[in-house]
Amino acid sequence: MSITGIRSFDPDTHQVIQFFQPLTLILGPNGCGKTTLIECLRYITTGDPPPNSDRGGSFVHDPKFAGETEVKAQVKLKFKDVLGKKVVVTRSLMVTQTAKKLTLKTLEGTIKRYGLNGETTEVSSKCAEIDAEMIGFLGVSKAILNHVIFCHQEESNWPLSEGKALKQRFDDIFAATRYIKALEEIRKKKNEMFHRELESNESRLSACRDIIQELEKKLKPISEKIIEIRSEQDKIGNLQGQLDKSLELIKNMKKMKKI
View 1 (spheres, one colour):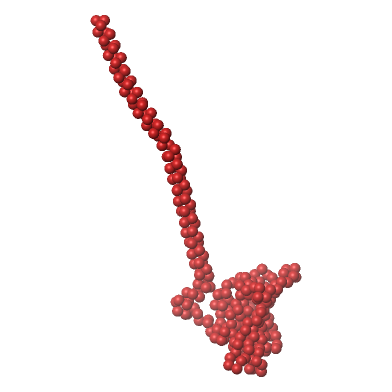
View 2 (tube, rainbow, N blue to C red):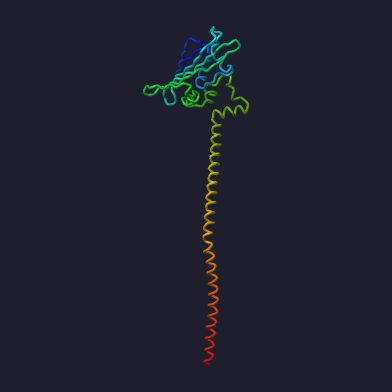
């Protein structure tokens, strides 16, 4: 990591800090910049300045100490991402001293990525969101970077905070909010699908009713004809019964004449 113009670090000199595996110990007297190293790691990975730093103004080297009205600061970190590729991320700041106050301005940042075959690609913060890219490079969320890995000593007692704030921190760390939103989105999609299916079924039902009405309309003359035929059948049956009685009567009369 390279630091220039952050807190007590000289704005005209690049201070390079190399981290070793599996552990790097940082030792030194009070005020030598130990906490600043962690603040720089947090800033380069998340884009957030330290707490109580006037939104970053006091995070940059004081122009009064440098005898200047303007001081530029830079933090650069070289590391390997989750895919094992080398990445160099740079964030730059500038503080201007006016008669009444310090004015902080964030300058253009860059991301340089090295391929396995030696090719390099570089994009600026004008084209890419560095905070989002860092989450992808490191494979952890911003909440974990802020509240766990690079938790500032002034905020390190957050596990003892009151219930609502504690719950919010845990929700951020475990991405519970995203999970809840995902569940809400699933419920919303299910409801939308249900309503679409209901509307589709109602549409099909209405179409079936129309078809039934059309068939009933076509069948009505046939039904009326069947009723007419049955009526004629009943008449024929009555006539057949009368004919049978008449034939039986004639038969009986012939028998009586022979006697």
